[in-house]
Length: 429
Image (tube, rainbow, N blue to C red; front, side):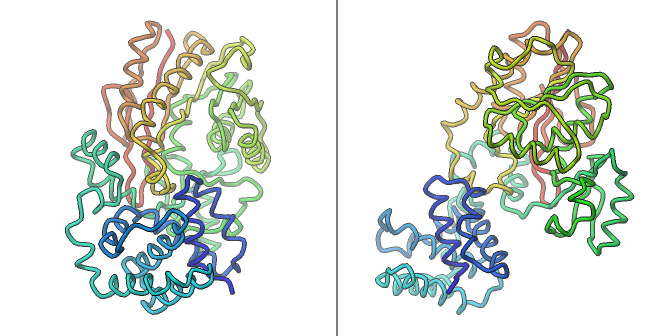
């Protein structure tokens, strides 16, 4: 018999072992009927969002740490405790199904322990979850909690709360096929409630997530799923007819599509990514939109192996980063990311920035972007770049969104609002 709680525990075990949540979710979902999959996904995302809180609160309940080979049992406890603490699931259903799952995986010895811990969680939950360390109370690893508090003392509480929230589903209306108001009417006719995004001119925010099969004209390219923050790139690029544009680190292709939708008469758009498999997603997205670009598989920093020597008028560098601005969409980041990852990412960003700068034509614009909230990857990275390149000048971003920084503009993740993003507009003299 299929069990979404057991499937969730098995998925979480793989994620805790280093697997990406996005890649692991469909693997363990295959054994479940369609009607059980929403619960399965809710459990996976929910446990990861509250992982550090659940771990800290339940630590006193374990007589001793479980062996690594029994990580699936620990995850069953977290799945049950998540339901007891954060959902309206009937306690007996949450407890009994997790206990029974122990027997399903042939670990009957764990059934009594799981039952005892979850019943204590049900009985003494308020006491267990009280007085947790500050980082655990907001379910963040200590290093990340400290980094956010240090960088953004005024905004930290809101950032941490947003990281644990359910993100809104946003769409980008294809400007080549219609306007936002018309698409909002089409959504209304399909009984889908939606509102215009606050800052992205083609952006629509759905009041509740929907399968793309329900979205009017999605298969025909009328709209794409893309967060409002990511959509802002096209306005900042200031695209004009006849330009040659590079989208570096392009996969999965959302921004490539947005560029092509915004200006129909570009000379060429080159979409570059280091992984051929990821370029397949770019290709699929462009095919659905009825658009085309030149796709190249290469390391963006290794220009000798891919650049033809012809300069680009516009370059979008959505740089590899810590992804600390999109934790609510990828809560496994809080398990996988480490403090010592940041210097390596900063060095990689610097290498790509310096390499791509030589590919930009005089008078051209490079838009540097990350989905991070850490200054070392953002404003400090840009300040260091400007210090190295005398032919570079930053153009201040005048906008109603985000916060102006000494270099660039920082957008923070917001509950029911955009993701966390950073942008800096760099002109070549």
